[in-house]
Image (cartoon, rainbow, N blue to C red; front, side, top):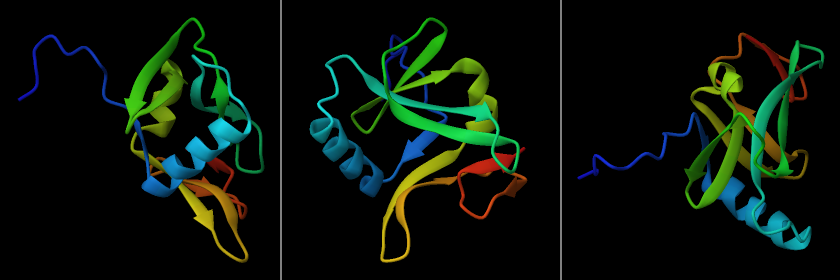
Amino acid sequence: MQSNTDTTPQSPVSLTEGAIKQLKILFDDKHVPEGYGLRVGIKGGGCSGFTYVLGFDEKKEGDEEFMVKGVKVYMEKAHGLYLLGMEIDWLDGLSNRGFIFNNPNATDTCGCGTSFSA
């Protein structure tokens, strides 16, 4: 049963177990400072209109903060509209290696999967 005093907002994005495992490896390998979290967002550009932002960063004014399976996630509030329901996964194959974005809001994506239109 959830407490009425629980004010942690529900994250608009989810992380697969593979993504979480890789993020923890990167966090340690890159010696990310304490207090940093995973920044998820978008910016204008790319061949389809928007590109994804994914990296370690400090919380900034206007950011929303979420906990996703033990990973602190920061996101600008306005980006939630474009990322609601998105799943971030990690691929580790022979031809593809990296984070992938499964975004149900994307009406078109580029061939490399790092930009989209909505």
